[in-house]
Image (tube, rainbow, N blue to C red; front, side):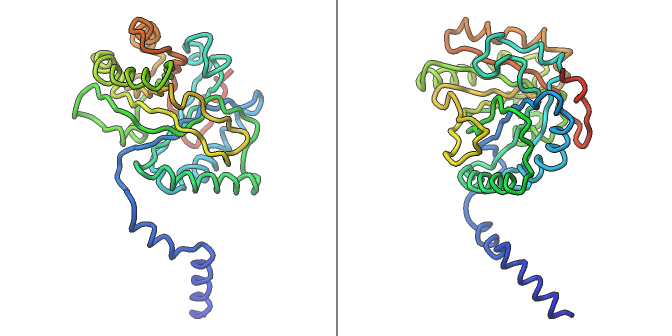
Length: 290
């Protein structure tokens, strides 16, 4: 009996190449800094909202994301119809119409492990498609892997750090996408955001921090239903982590972000979109999407 169990364990180890994990764990970076992110905004097809939510909650969030190497934190967010109607500008280069994309998922990836994670995620998503574990009744509105550029804190060293952001119980998230005319203009915009605009905007606001990312191109062997990333050389993505429900504070604190940027002459706001966190394992908010 013991010999049989031992043989079964050895067979399982060989089939999953478990011995390779000991070698892989001993090399490369493994810090806590979110050097990269996956930010994906998706619109379930009308009439398929409950099915999409259950698939994502019960399977894809885990098998298609959290179970993968080097992806160490994740959180889902949702925009009810009320929140969708707060978005601007009306003519957006990101979302057409601007209300499209009622679910947003954000994941942190360990700094320096982008290539390692990408190799795994491409292979896993091919497997999930082969195993018919992908919900196709959805549209990717804004999906991109991104490199971290900066984090600006409202309260300095006090409070959660950016690597805590997806685990801390924030009441809301604001997605802001800014386009510039070229790489030089983006570098100038980043410096202005980091040193001037964001510190001023955060003072006295319900946002505890803003993380800033730049998109990276998706691999050529990506899934066919995900479009290649736009704005690789010209775009910045900002995530504002809110301590208040955006429905209570959006007008007072976040309605004029496009005007500030236009006045600076440094870029164009292409999307400002507020979200609230989903409640894992439930269908809360699904009946408020339309």
